[in-house]
Length: 136
Image (cartoon, rainbow, N blue to C red; front, side, top):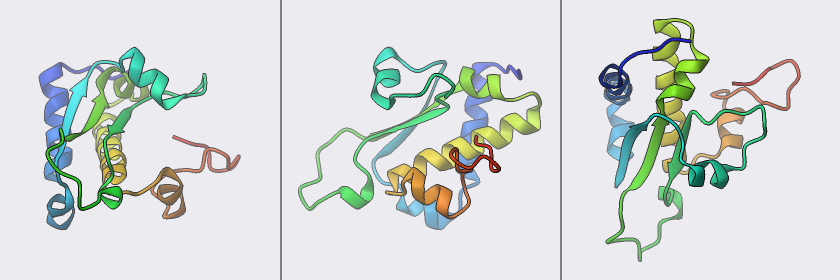
């Protein structure tokens, strides 16, 4: 387990956002990225995780691909990055940096309307049903 202070972790999230290509940054619309230690009970219930799954991040909102002309005057979508869960997955600073970046990109992909299935199809995620591929 790799533990860092809250400020240091928030800096890793900010660095991950800063490292995104400008073309992607321009597509982000009405979305806030926040850090929390652990998911709330409501967030845990919402995602229906299996016993062996860990929630590293969560997108809550209306994906850009599902927004209609009536979209407006709404609270920002929210991407929450869960610090303690990510730290528990990592045993080095390099692993922590990589996992934060991966989780930020994964959750922002959902904001852009990209599903888990599509992330697997394009090779960004391992297929958890593939015995050879393992999983994240």
